[in-house]
Image 1 (tube, rainbow, N blue to C red):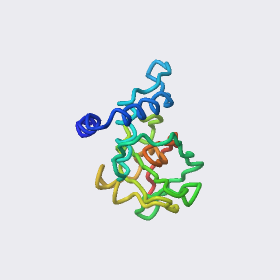
Image 2 (cartoon, helix red, strand yellow):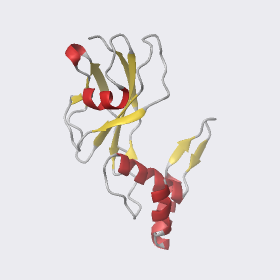
Image 3 (cartoon, one colour):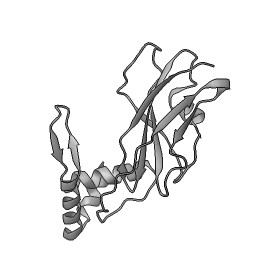
Image 4 (spheres, rainbow, N blue to C red):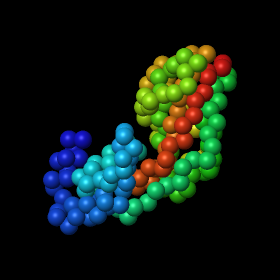
Length: 173
């Protein structure tokens, strides 16, 4: 966030105006269900925060609004010491990356999760399936049989994100 603030100050007036226009087109909903639009600074931080997380370069000029399509399906597999996700549409569209968020391991009886952390980002236009075992184990430890893991899968392009596809899986072997 500090890097985005410093970079924001270095933008020209025209660039800040472009971000202001983009922010006015991006609508979000707060915790009370009220819709609001972003300021230019919020749009700049949002787009460039996603770009950094996805391994992309920061952009100074506001891009054209572009929302990638969400995944249609996702199937998690954990047999034979693996942990992978198969998804459609596959391969992803050109320049689209899949950001994979996961929860810590939970009780199998749990039905809701709000604690998702980024564990992996695919290459652009990646094909299904994607192996998650190494990335998940590095972040949360080896999955334990009988525990539930929640996943949130988001497509991204140019700093814009699709809606999440949220699913969960109980580790079986």
